[in-house]
Length: 239
Image 1 (cartoon, rainbow, N blue to C red):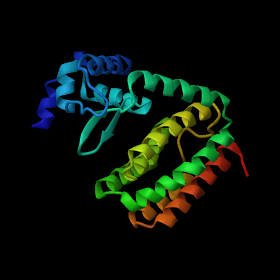
Image 2 (tube, one colour; image 1 turned 30 degrees about the vertical axis):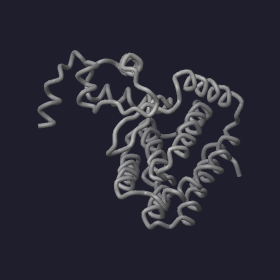
Image 3 (cartoon, helix red, strand yellow; image 1 turned 45 degrees about the horizontal axis):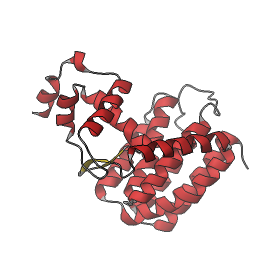
Image 4 (cartoon, rainbow, N blue to C red; image 1 turned 180 degrees about the horizontal axis):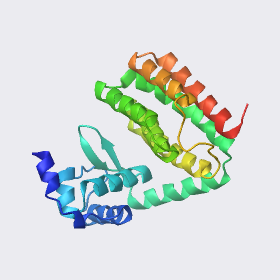
């Protein structure tokens, strides 16, 4: 039945990602949704906004990255506890930090936060969260381009933050990741069109995922630290 439903959405109603983001923002504002309120399910949003399933999901992804909404698998999509003005202030702060931060200092900030998040994930991850983490891991390994790999790598690391089951840690991760993307943009050159099958991150991701799945907090923390050290050495030539 779900497949039949999606097929009834006319292709010409699909909007580009930017337009969908603006439609979603207006929908939240005009609907008087307050921080903490749950948005309607995707099926209703598709009809209300007149967009395709893919366009809606890309729009929701963009709003989640900027902190306007947050999503909890099995529970729904919620308006962020940050007010609109606060979200813009956070975005400005993130931009300012990114312009002043070196790649090396950015990695050191990750080393302070992400190993601890991995430890919390090993303690709190649900079976569903582990499945999402494993799926992101598989998709990153199957990526056919660096752009696709980086998207799936983002998803893998965020799935670990989600698995920690702590909204504050997830919010900290999202802001850190936004700064990371801004700092790293243009700083990395690629010699191949896609990651090789023996790309070191694949084994490192497996070590992190296996430790979280085994509920081994110390091992998860150490595996994440080794991974970030490896990323630093590989991308920024830091010893």
